[in-house]
Amino acid sequence: MNVITDSVEISTRGHTDIIDITPQVEQVLEEAELERGNLTVFVSGSTAGITSIEYEPGLLKDLPEAFEKMAPTGVTYHHDEAWGDGNGYAHVRAAMLGSSFTVPFDNGKLLLGTWQQIVVIDFDNRPRRRNVVVQMIGE
Image 1: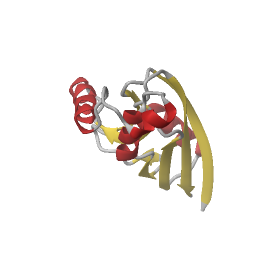
Image 2 (image 1 turned 30 degrees about the horizontal axis):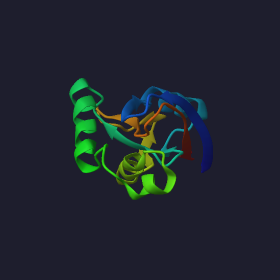
Image 3 (image 1 turned 90 degrees about the vertical axis):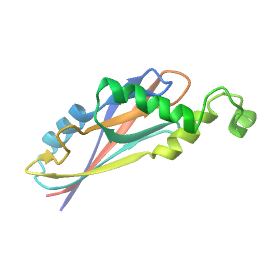
Image 4 (image 1 turned 90 degrees about the horizontal axis):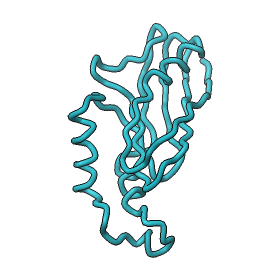
């Protein structure tokens, strides 16, 4: 059993920017030369999250609209009172989504569904550089 840790760097626009990182993650897995196991992706930072969706135009609108209903912008958050950075909503959204996603792999390929991609969602109120850790456990 091997454990290999790598990372992917991305630039985001913030404001619920949804970025498909599936090709980069597949490349990291290919370079690791592992056949089977589990791969975890983890986005560093407390205002971004990671999940899987069908990366298509309708969902790229639906998902931000859903988050706006659950943790709206333009309202006061206690976090904003403490730090004055106006991104309390981003912290709440990121906590709701979660910072990691795990997918099994076999024959050196991610076992994602046909219409399933791995996405990072940056909720912050400004563009960011994000580090996405990719850790593989397998053989």
